[in-house]
Length: 303
Image (cartoon, rainbow, N blue to C red; front, top):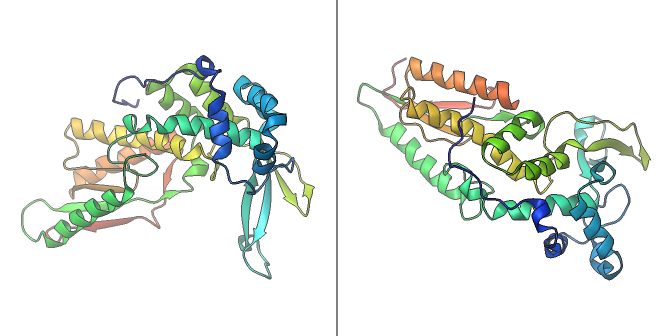
């Protein structure tokens, strides 16, 4: 259904680089030493300080990539936002991941940084090395200025600001896996990335007491070093649908990422745009929050 462009992604298979133990060490050095530990209670500082003792076992565990379930167990703790919390909204949920899982996820993320810019549409700037999200802000400002100044002409213009409802939580794993394969990622690499996502189990920890363990069926975990890159790949599906519509000339003048769309403001193009968003929602699980989304029209747009 999605026609992703750009050819095959050049990526060395994880198993072809088992000897690169320095990747694991680099990921560990990049971690905050006393940030929240996992359910086992070990912070990154322990592994950084005693690497000469535990390093070999950690490298074997991470590079082997087998026992994901035991290292991908996550405690959810509730941090109060105020001194006297009364309702659930007064707490901020924090996921406590094990350092072993963070090492695998951060190592994959570090490697993705090297080539993610070759895979993602040029209109997407966030989390892509070498691109500045401020560039999109400046472009958006210039286009919105053009919309405000356009008072004449038969064809009006519109800018659509989209807010995706619970964007990370709604990502469908099956869709994400198929997009990665379609983009040309190695099958073993895709399997490794999906294991990081799909083997997670959660338990709510209240006052040191772990509750019932449950397993998610979709979504990405916010705060995980791998999640921003996987979400970029997820969003590339929307970019591909829009590029296809532009190529078929059923939408004119669209430059897009997953937040801002610019087009001619006609009923026909609005219908096409809505159909694209519906198709993207059916495939990826992403859903537009229309209460937080906005449409701007140029002054010459007919009612």
